[in-house]
Image 1: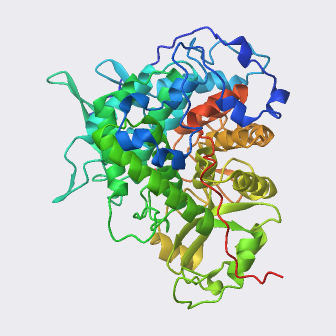
Image 2 (image 1 turned 90 degrees about the horizontal axis):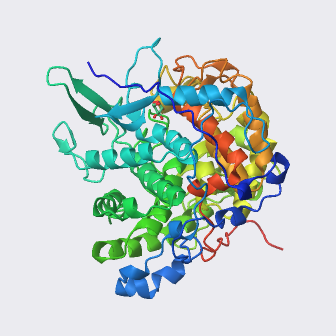
Image 3 (image 1 turned 90 degrees about the vertical axis):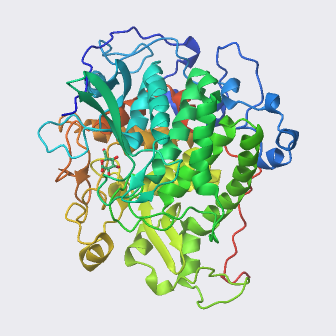
Length: 571
Ligand code: GLC
């Protein structure tokens, strides 16, 4: 019944680039990321000091906060904007890019496919459909997913086409104000949809939007990540275009406040992390990611930092900024202390005493060393570390999750040392995490009895398939951004090469199965839009690393790395 206007009309625009952004592939290895973020943009906006550069501590005691001086609000986007939208660029007719880079033939094909996935509402582009695969039963893959649209949006922004991103942000914001109900229960005002579609009424010849906030989703879980992605995308749009008028709109300010109010409200929590149900993020089925999953915590942290850059400090905004600053401090302390795992920490946990009482306890969550899985001892390299999947009372989920670790690097939730360690681990465990298709959504898979208990016998999430240790090409953009931010683009280049050997030939599958990702996923859609967009974004970031500034935040120097207490005997 519903129709999508798929745009097959493509602009063959020329490729215009700033001479100062020219660099060769070899140059990228020597790039200092902090310099990239400081790249001045050629727009005539008064240069203000960036919030990226300002400390949270400074902010919490700042006169702006105390006086609510709106005029002195700091715009990071007023400071510097990456990849100025001076011209549109597409892969079409550009077998060789104009900057000395060899453009892979797949790039043009990918742009074609991405444009075919565009969804129009009353004549305006508003998003991209999840998969243009007519061979499979559609389920909800004919919808525009908020999380799936992010790499598409970044591709369009990097190509100097912000209109679709602006429309998407405004349309989803309108959807937020809908009344949301599951049976007789009303969801929080700030919840953003997981997805939406355009409904065409042929009788009235009229189009309307239909959104899903979890009330139609398999499992009926509301997407916690959608709101965070919305804020992160609003900041990427603002940074990329230098246009702060969208974020400044009272509707956008309110939208951000509503999203964050859901997460910052006081309750029974004893941790600054966000408690959530299984399946509320990219892994949208039961996979043991309930509680405090790393993906949500990292996105929460990033969204808080982006909101801090975008929120006006007037009446309600001021109060929220104060709450955000406090939460960021607590959240970074908690995550860096308790979610971090490296060889030393692993050894400490292995020797943990249990049943400790009072505030002097070292093993605060009473994790029983016997719960350490066998695989983690072999997986942990000498050099390297990662944020584990989940930490809650007596439970540490030691699985490695790609999205959470990459977002931790991009948002600077990870300290520079931790970011380096995450990359070291990816290099050291290349076969396991990248193998024949980047990148494992999580590692390792759960099997047998554990699979039965954890997934509820989910036949789609069998071992090394889909969310259970499957390999997802979309994650390539996150890996590439993290590589560039940590100054190691050669890792991304290797991963992209691996993907290029198969992605297009296999028709851009949603995911791959098997221990090393050798097989096209059992139920994977073909022409999955975020696989296509993820590849394009990865390529464009390698070509012009300054693009990474759209999705990366510099470290806040005042959020000191924590001194971790150890129960090992110090001589
Ligand atoms: C799958 C993924 C989810 C994605 C959706 C649409 O359900 O798990 O993250 O948003 O497909 O592509």
